[in-house]
Every structure is written in C-alpha cells, then in structure tokens.
Length: 337
Image (cartoon, one colour):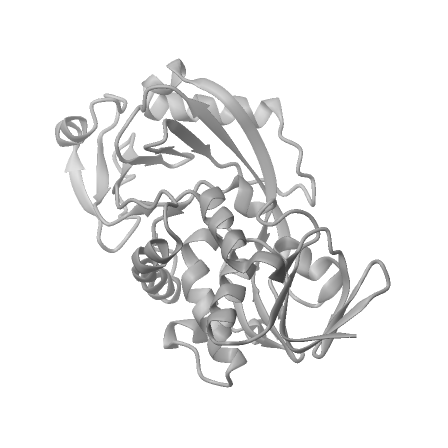
C-alpha cells in the first residue's frame, strides 16, 4: 500500500493550493482528482477577488485571503492577477447599501467618467478600488506544473477515512492526514454528514473589444474584462442538484443582465458557456477544520478562488497541529453539530 504524509481528495484550486503548501513544508503529498485538475467549479469560476460584506466573520476571512493573493500570484507566475477595482452599479434609489467595507459611493456622472461603457440608466455605483481578479484556469495550470506527478487525475475516491482513502478501482492509499477538498462532491459519498449541497452556476466567456477596464457588477451579474481580450459573465445560482449542463435559458439571462449593465457587451462574440456545481453550506460560509479525523477544506460556495490562499494556509497549520489564523475559527465544520 502506498503511504503519504498527506492525501488530498479533490484537485480544484483549494486542493491544489493546499497540496502545494504542504509540499513546501517538506511533506509527501498525493492529490486525487476524479476528473481533470481544476475541471469542476474552478473551471467555471470568473476569478473575482472581492470580499463583499456578508457577515463580519466572512469579511475578516475574505480580507485576509485577498491580502495573501498578491504574493501568491507572484509565486505562481503569470496568472492574470490584477488589482483592477470594481464598480457595483445601482439602478434605483434604495440600492445604495455598500457591498464592501472599503466601498465609496459615486454618482452617475462620476461613474460614467470612470467607465463610459456602463449604462447611463444607473443612478450611481459603489467604487471598490482594491477589488482584483485572477484567471482561475491559469492558476490551475501553474499549480499543476508545480505539483507534477503528485497529482493523480481520474482517481475516483469512494471512501475517505482518517488514515487513508479507497479508490473505485479497489486500490487504497494510506496517509497520516487526509484533506477533504472535493467541493460539492464531498458530502455525496465521502462524508455524508457534512452540510454541503451542490449549487449550480453558469458563466459565459466572450471575445472582442473590452467593454470596461474594471469589474462591473449589478444585483444579478458581474462582467469581468481580462487583458487577454476575454470577458467573463457570471453567474447563475440554481438549485439543480449535480446537473452541470449549460442551458440556453441561463445564457440568455446572463447576456440580458450584462447588456443592461454594460451595453457594449452586446457587440461581443460568445465563445463558451460552462456550468458547474459549487459547494454550498447552510450559512454560505466555508468549512475549514477537523472533521471525523480528517481535515475539511470545503463549502466555499462562490468564494473558492478568493479564499484559496487563506484556506491552504489553514490546512498546513492544521496538519502541523497548530492553530490556524483566528479568522478561520468561525468556519469550523463542527459549528453545525
């Protein structure tokens, strides 16, 4: 039987980042991914790094992780990281609740001066200068290159315990610690009592002249222009189980909302529609901590890209028997017991 210090179940951005940090600590690591690395929720993600105000506890964790992203991106290389800032548009008075602690309200004229392409029907916007973006697909490519043969694609884990995992082909891998980072799939077969459910989301990728220089958001859409010439639109929120089929209805909805916010989007070419399932929890907060002898790093819902550096940091601390950063404490999986 093969033996490792760490067996990571799940090869999305959370599992890969955690594996990298563990290897950098001198630990032997095996990453087991049921498909291709990063082919699930990470592949569909837009890569917005914006710690919106959801709760004081979440905001603290999100701000910590956003603070780790510049050095993480530098370490990885060319991954499309840029602190482009964002505008959260309002289309009616009464929508002016700030989405983040560092948001500054600007009126319609100031908004159009910053981003002439946004809809003149907006009443103003919240300007968040520190919001950033990264290309999750490029992040995965760099993590895969750094981890090399530590990653085992098409390895379907059917059982996970405190001392190892069993695969669908009947083989077993032993490990001193098992990290469960399988996203929405974590609770389907591996840890049934974990309060994680699949939440479908669809994004679109378009090509053409960039419609803005900042991330543009409204109540139902975000428009993410990349320097590469790609614009990403996202994302739907659908309670549809493990269905990952992109639909014409979702495409039409996203395009309509995007054109309402940024009319120039109508001139872009649609090149890809992709859907996946995010790991949701009862309070939409992540699950990071000990669970039945394993370490859980899951339930990140719509914030897996943003929270990857802080989660990986916490996983390594837990493996070493140390206390993670205090911002992690409110998100123990045990809070639902």
